[in-house]
Structures are given as structure tokens and as C-alpha cells.
Length: 168
Length: 275
Image (cartoon, rainbow over all chains, first blue to last red; front, side, top):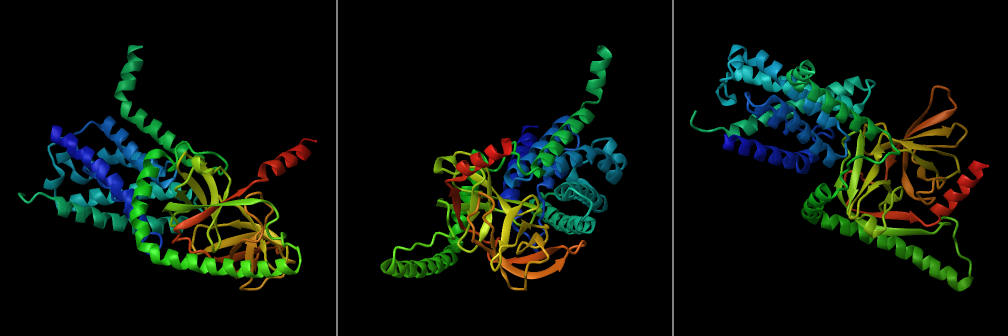
């Protein structure tokens, strides 16, 4: 149990620093940035305390916001993503989630992809919606959401492959 | 009472979610109103310290370019100084038309700069201890950068001209027709000048300078050149796209401008407003 807490705390700090110091400065093609810190929300233990989880996600998002001077857009996006995560888990992993016995590393690749994709899309959509703050640039909003989400999803799976345990 | 507590415990996740969402929306909305200080900005001790640490490493890679820029500026200033000394020998005439108020320039290092978002900010490595105050102008040798917004003892945040809330007075170099400089959030090299009356004589390639009607920038600082222009719907004002002289994606060092007569002028203006 202690190693779980330690792992998540370490992941929180490393992802926050990685995001604000490196990933926010990529600006691929001028406007596409990956938001890898969503990985914390994706990997938080499925049977962990939901109240604590929502609060931690808020802190993570707000941390990024403070560095970025962006008000509360990342915080709002993180809170929404954390709040709807149980529903997405049930949708993607079906019955096995209800028994709370699954681990992320031992799931089907197909359901794993749908889980990551939905959470990332929801998070990015809320993020960019609040950043633009109106519907006048709807096309640019959707373009930014889709491209950034693709970038993030690729990075998420690369990171998972890099840090997965060999003994599977 | 028991039921209320039970209800709260049962719905604690929903309540926490709504509370945190409201709080972050409040922060977001507050960040969109221009004249308000932020709750917490990146000019604080922790994030400012981390940013200045990384920019120490980063600035090393751009040393050559910054040196070139300084050389260029030195060259220009020396040329001006030479003509100034020449004119001094002939007569005691002194040209004060371009900088008529007393301005103090302070140099500082940029430790964080965004340009890819709709509302962009910079963080610089000087704060109230170095004499920086809110609403001072920030420029480079090539053009304007923004206006100081939040100040902490050692750091300050600057609202970039690449920010949808930024409004800066600017004018044509040829005539005195002025307008407002805004940004549509699209291209970090192109800003827009609006509210220029259609009687103004403009052409592509014309230079745009600061207007000097605000108390922040002195008159005559370069901004950019006209890229293209069109009339608005009522056909009485121009919408002008301006290509910036400054590369906003690569700013290493800036000057912060203090207008020493700002307080005096503001007091005077308030006096006439009261009457």
C-alpha cells in the first residue's frame, strides 16, 4: 500500500514538472502541445478513494495553471476528467470493473485504447473550450482538440510501453 | 439533521466535484478580465524560482544571437550619439520631441514566454525590489512586448501583446491617425490594428509606432509594418494586419520602461474628471 502512495506521489510531481518545463514548450506546428500529465488521472488506482482522487486531480491541474498563468482551465478539465472516470471505466472495461479486480496493465488492448482515448478527448475538449472561452472559433477549437489529443495519446502509450514491467 | 449529514456523505463526490469546478471556473473567468490582479500568478516564489533556474540553462544556447542583437543596437545608438554630438557643437538645440516625458529604462531577463495560446503571458526576473511596478511597458530593442501585470518581490508577469485582452494605443508613423492594437489569437507574428479612421492614408509596408496617448509607452517606439488591410462593415474604419518587427517566439532580454510623470499626469486627469 505504501508503495502505491509513493508511486502516485512521485508520478504527480514528475508529470507536473515534465509538463510545465518541457511539454508546454513544444508547440508543434505552432499550436499543438501534448498534455501528458493526464497520465496521472489515467493510472490512479481504479479502486482508490474517489473523493481524494478528484481533489488530487484538481491540484495537479491547478499546478499547471499557476505555471502557465491560465486561470483555472487545466484545473477544470482535470476535475471533469476525474469525475467522469468511473463511468468511462465501466463503459470500456465492462463487468470486470464492477468487481474492482482489474489492473491497468492486465486489460485488453482494445478496451485500454478506448479508455485512454475517451478520457483524453474529454479533458482536451474542456481545456480548449475554456481557453477560447467562446464558440466563435468552434472549428479551430475542434482542430486543436483532435490534434493535441492524438499527440497526447501517442505519448501516453509510448510512456506506458517504456515503463511497463517485463514480467507479464 | 441526521438525514442531511447522510445526504452530504452519500453525495460527497458530487458536491466536491461541483465545488472544485466552480472554483476553477471562477479562476478562469477572473483571468479573462484584464484589469484585475490574479489570485496566484506565475510571479510567485516557487514557480518563479523554477523558471529562472531552467532559463539559466536555456539562455546559454541563444548567447550568440543575443550578442548579435546587442551589437546591432549598439551600432544604432552610436550612430544616434554621433549625430547628437555633432549638433551639440553647432548650437544648444536639443530634440526632445520623440521622448518628451522622463522615462527610466531597466533591463531584465525573460524566464518564461508563451505564444501558442490565446492569452499569453511572460515572466521576467525582476520584481518590486528592482523597482518594477504594475502597468509599466516592456519592450526589446526591436519593438514592444507587453505591459507588466503582477509583481512579486523578485519576479513579474507581463501581459503579452499576444493576448486577447491586450489593448495598446498605436499610430501610423507618417500621420497622426491612431488606433488600438489587438490580437485575434491566430499567428504569433501578426497583430491587428483596429479603429483607424478610413481617411488615414495607408499602404502596405507602412510602419506602425506606439501612439503615446497612454501613459505606458513613450511615443515613437517601433511595432511593425502593415501586411494587409481592409475596411470594416461600416466602411468607416480600417482593420489592419501588422507584421511585428519583434520575433515574439524568441525573446531573451527586455527593457522595462517607467514613466516618472505617470502619477502626476494621472492625478491631473482625475482632477478634471471630478469637476
